Image (cartoon, rainbow, N blue to C red; front, side, top):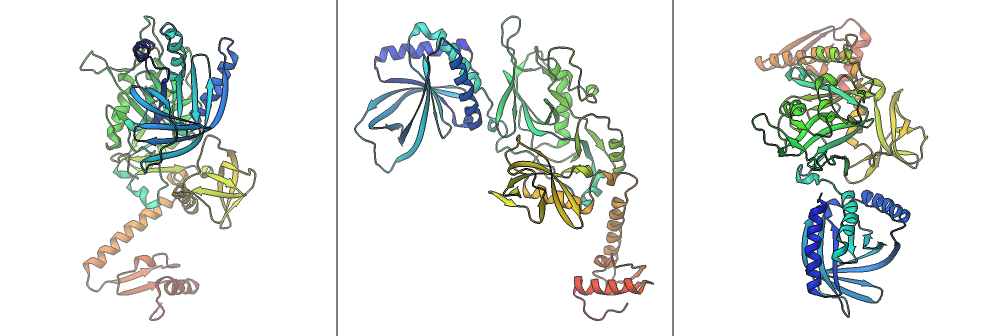
Amino acid sequence: MIEANDLQAILLNVFTDIEILNDSNVELEFRLKKHYRNQALIDKFIHDYEQYIAASDAVQSETISYDETLIKDRNVVYRKRGDTVINKEQINSIDIMPFKLVLSIEHRVDQLPTSNNTETSHHVRRSIISQYHRIDITDNTRLEIELLRFDIGLIDTITSDLITILDYFDTVDINAYLPNFSFQKPITPFIHDLLDINKGFYITNKIDGVRRLLIIADKGVYDYDNDVRKIFDYGMNATDTPNAFYVIYNTSDTPQQHVIICDCEYYNGKYYCFDILYFDQDLRSHKYQTRLSFLDKLPKILKVSNMPKLADTCDTSAMHKPYPVHSVKHVNILLKKNIELIPSIADIDNYIKNINSFILLDGHILTYKSSKYYDDWVYKIKYEYKNTLDVLIKDKQCYQQDINSVSTIPNLIYDGKYQDGIVEVLLVRRSKQYYALCIRKRDDKCKPNFKYTINSIYSALHYGLNTDIFNNNSTLLLRRYHNSIKKKILAKCIHNSSDPTLIDIGSGNGADIGKWEGFKTITTIEASPSKIQVIKNRLKSNYNICKDIYI
């Protein structure tokens, strides 16, 4: 964000140039750059700014709108409004993030160009005219601030108005730090995936919040989900010097400006951090264990003079206090999640038993210690009662996000409480039929869950995959581990023998039929005639064995 003194110096130079040009058709405007064009932000700005100028007796304002044809021909822009055609030729431009200050001269011309090099667009231009400037907004999210007076004696007043407007759009270009960014999505694992826990996984709580990035930059703190918003301004200290964000290294007393980007879950006005994606460099290609080492250092390296709790609440000793006591006026917004390395499945059960949290939890997240941010080795395990989906409701049906659009979720019965919008529903299975029971509308979300996410939740419900499988009352993991060991032993027998023979004692209903493949001779021993018939039927239907069955 540009400082007022710097903007005053720029305007003084430009106003002097305009005076030298002595051309009544000169135009000076701030154009919002493409990266920062956000429809929701512009709409909010228009609403707030119109209220501001309407409440100010000192500002005479007018809002108008009109149709306009715009044609671009190389570096010249032609505009037709009614019967008037104007071409605009750019003389100079200056970057004033997130705007570009453009000096140009307009001339009336007879007609619009018709060459093959032109690009034509039609839009409605809406203008808010105040005493010293006009704000133009078009329906394709372009926003321009055109100065109407170039009086050097008014520079202080004009600068004050402009700083207010520019600060509204003070944001961060996420692509400059994390190109092609998309959030890493935890997936619901299959049972056999959990047998790899001993390779080294980290576990943390899954909070029932909204996924966001927290961006700590030079002059403020921002957050990002689909858009970037400024949520905190460092302001000025006692000596009226800007409080930039600094990182202090142990090896040097010289502060350097930096940007840190944390991956968080946003809940109840706080950001619960579990990963760092940017610190001096893009960290997404680093192992999770390495990224956590940056997170562990954060309390020591983060120094913000008028926001001390930002560093203090990252301390591990404070992590078990989800609602810190605000004994000072500063708000604790950044909290580090409790993240532990688990060498075995038994440690997952101990972690869950020792949870002492008043935060609404969804379940737990398991992340492989060597996984990169682009990998799929991040699993979510939900509580049984938290198999929820965010779906789009339309025409009393549930829709999921597909690759390019939305599609209906098949064989799902909706209870019909809400008629439209994004709705959080509880997925329930009764008598092999799935039901969607409304919980709440999700006005904070713009898209439903992706179809692969929904499929994984269906799978978890079908196989009973929830946090209960880690306690001593569940034998699901034990049975799956037993089956995997048995399959490996039988595969080794097939590999080491030219004529492998299998004797299956107590075959039951034939649950191990899939492990028989590769054996030339199989002898099953089962006392129940009805179970023997089940085995025969399964062999015929699943393995296409119609004869030579002797059981």
